[in-house]
Image: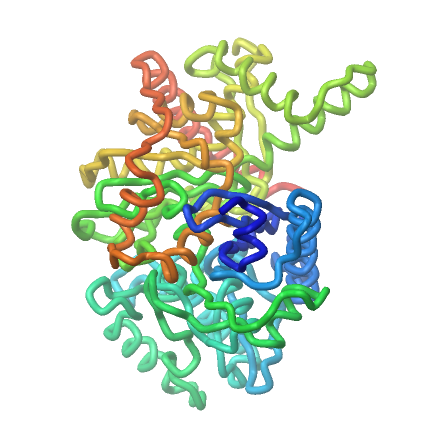
Length: 530
């Protein structure tokens, strides 16, 4: 069947992911190949000191994204999307979305970007003997409790952004195990919330006298391949305001962007890993065994099928690069130079390849917001140099590219050098890798490991959740997820690999040593900013 016939017969599969700056829809065929896309651009807002997206922005963004997909399908294939074989929703992980009995959100969505939960995260990490990051849902919940926020007593449901959208279109209060592991730790054997930690939390808050216990308000946990409900009539209209989309479509468990990144890069099997580098960045390495002890810079989450994953999450990545490219674009326009923004990115990324391996002494901190891995509760983008440093465009751009993954290296050095975690393959995806081989070469130098990028890497998490949706309805051999991805989706394709050079590795090590030694400069900039 051709793409038009697949769509018109309802055999296409849809994945939608809510990223930090873009909501993206990818329509795939039963063989997992993308056949249409749609998107919507959005931005978080700083409201009362907290980063948020309004529920109005969530629904407008979803509907506009789907409308864009529908328009593109009509233009490309002259056919309407009436039904689908399956749908999946994913979104940026963690954060805090509490609802009351009437289904009303009690406070504006608090995203992963917020760092106001330091006290709660520290207390819970000590209680559980387990690293509990600032952005996890349990940290937000406990911070609201110790801050005596009145809304807490009225909570009947607490979920993530992906879980919220899924609930609204299916009526099911469920969550994929990977996303659930960013709410409170998950037991890899039971594939649900860790019972010991749940009991400890309930005991901790018992004196508060709330009417609920933790499991009363958390979503039910599902693993990849399980059916997570069907699109309701109301849900179909919430998604497609034109009214063409029919209800009854099966939906896979909603997942976080970390899980969809693992699926999209075939990094679900043990000893594989991936790096997602865009507005934020994170690396995911699937572990053969638990780490020897908790580490504050390392989160332990799971794959979409419940295997333990060591995650290094960085709040900042390419936003500062984007700001500089925008500045260069303004200068081009002043000169009357005509060049597309994409070509400008490519030009600037490629010039970095000719810079000194240690950036000539130049230093860049990309902290648009706080960065927990390096202990910064707030951020201020900073470029630092001395008069004797080699201040060239090539070194400047290389410093920006290094700076975007500097925190990622600090976290991964713990895994690779202290815990001696073994990794056979690391795959990169996200905007950092759009210019061929440049981002790969920089990351290879940072991690001293070969980095692969696949042709499908640009499809990102929306493609990843579409794969997980297809896995629910199109797996006749009943393969486990790792084998399904390896044998069916990727069929042995491991992408294009770039290996590190000794010179680059040595240069990045010099850069990161200076980066860590100079962190007090960034701290001072944060403390004294107006």
